[in-house]
Image 1 (cartoon, rainbow, N blue to C red):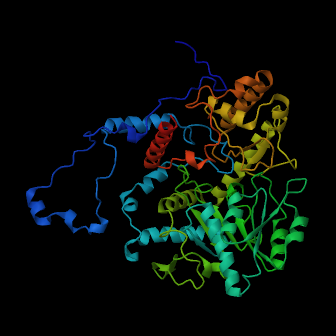
Image 2: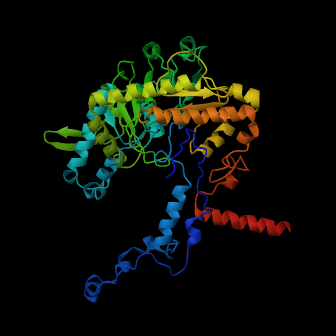
Image 3: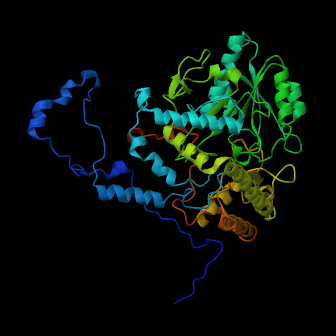
Length: 528
C-alpha cells in the first residue's frame, strides 16, 4: 500500500481532448440506431397510407438530412463532448459571477421527468392541467411573499425577456395615461446589466446612464440632475454587479416617483437578499427574479430560463397574459387583462423551470430561504477577505462587506507583470476551474467577477483561492507560463479573437457551415 498524497492545488488536472467530429460528420449511410418494426398488415389495411393525408404544402419534398449513426457511437460522441466541458456539476463553479451557479438538487430532476409532467401539453383543456396550474399559482403566491409584489407572470423565458416586458409595461402605462409622447427617457446605472438599457432602447426610449460616486454607489446627485418630466422609468440592479448594496435605494425610487416615473427592479442579483429585504419596501413598481439563478433551476447553455415578473396591484392589468388565478376550487386562465402588453412568448413559460423552483422553495421554506442568503453572503465575504490579499488583486470602491458577489481587478498584476485578466482566465482552466471577467466595455480595469453562492464549502472556496494564489505567484515569477496558458485544456488559445464580431465566421447550423465552406472554396479556386 502507498499513502495517498493530495495537493491543495489541482496541478495534475488534464482535460480530455478527443478532437471529436461534429455529429453530422459521423454520418454513415445505412447505419441505424433503432430498427422500427413494421406494422402488421391488418393495421396497414385499417389505417391506409397516412402520408397522403398530409396536405401537400406541409409535406416534405425530400427526407430530412439527419445523420445515420449507431447507438454506441452516439453515446460515445456525447460522453466525449461532456469530458471536454467544464460545468457546475464538474468543477467548483464560483467563477461565473452574476450567474449564481448554485447546486441544482438532482431529486428535482426526477420530478420533471415524471410522465405526469413530461406528457403535459399547453394546449390541453384547462380542466386537465389543474395540477400544473396549481403549481404556477402557488409559486405566484410564494414570489409575492418574497418580493412584496401583488401579481406575477412566469411567461418571460429569461431575465432579458422580463426586462423587455417591464419596459413594455412602462410604455403601455404612459400610453394609457396619454403621456407617452413626452416621457421618452429611461434611467439606468453603469454597473447594471446591459440588457436593462438594450430592452428599453428596443421600446424606443432614450437611455440616461448614472455613473457611480467615489465609493461605487450610484450617484444620487447625478440622478437628481437627470430626472425630469421626460422620465418614463428607472431600472436598476441592487446590488449591482460589483456586489455593493445601495442602502439608500428607497431615496432613488422616491426621486423618480416624484417626477411621475415608474421604477423597475432587476433582481438577478437577489441571492443575498432572500428573506432580508424586498422590492416593495424599496419602493419599486415592478421587479423580476431569474428562477434559473436564484431559485435553483439549471442554466443549461443559455436556457431553459424563466424571468419571474412581479408587479404592484396598479400594474397587474398590464401583465403579459394569460395569468393563472384561483376561482373557488378551480384554477383558471385570466385572459381579460385590460391593458395587457400581450404575450412575450408562447404559452405560460418554461414549465420545467417553474416546477424545479417551486419544489426548491417548498423544500426550504421561509427560514431556509433566509439561510440561503446569509450563507451566500458569508461565503462571498470570506472569499473577498482572501482574494484581496492576493498579490496583484484588488476590489475597487468602498471597503467593507460586499453582498453576494464581487467584481475584482487584476489592474496591479497587469501593470507589474503584463499578465492580463484574460491570461489568468485561461490559466484557471489548467486547474479545472474557470472565471468570468465582466460585461463590455470594462469599467473596472482587468476585471474578474466571483460569486460563491450558498452551495460551496470552505474547502471548495480554499481550493479556488489557492489556484488564484498559484497563478499570481506564476505571474510574478514566470509570467510566460500564464500568458501561454492553457496547456491542459481541451483547446488552446484562439488564434482569431474577432470570431464573435465577424459575421462571416458565424456558423449557427451545419447547413450554414457547409454553405460557407463551399463559398470559401469557390473564392480560393477563383484566386488561383
